[in-house]
Image (cartoon, rainbow, N blue to C red):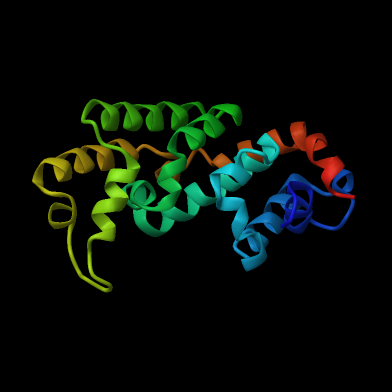
Amino acid sequence: MENIGELVRGLLPKDDLSTLSSEAIVEHIAMNMHKNELVKLRDRETFVQLPVVLQDILLLLDFDIELQMNGIVGFLENSTGFYLEETIQALNRIRATKDFEIMTGIKRLLDSKGVTPMHLKENVNQLSLYQVTNVAVTHGDDLSEVLVEIDAYAENLYLYRDSDNIFDLLFIYLQENKIHLYSYAK
């Protein structure tokens, strides 16, 4: 079994991190994070042992990918939604204030209705492979109303604003914190 150090080294660039830009480091991680030998990084017990700065990069890359491909509901329904609270905290750490507030509002709405990403994922898992459906069929009328409301909240996320980009904030955050990765990059 690989230890955390080996997994992290498999994800980071081989070059001296102190000489690389934050953009280059994030790009390298994005290109390698889905390799088979790194799938263990997604296990919660492994994930929580990663350096926080690396957790944040992975969370925000996954968040962006899901938003771009499937919207906020897809993010919540997918296994990425299991890390909703951690993603919200990552947005806070990179100082993405608007997005932190929006996602906190979405979490509050889910909590007020007693809905969890696990519940949403279970509904999706009950569908047959390649089944074409809609939110009301997948989650029921009551839940579909909540998800429509969540979609409305999400229309204000960075992805839909011209003036903001969480990656600019992530790059600044990484530049300030990449020292926490140096010990793994040997």
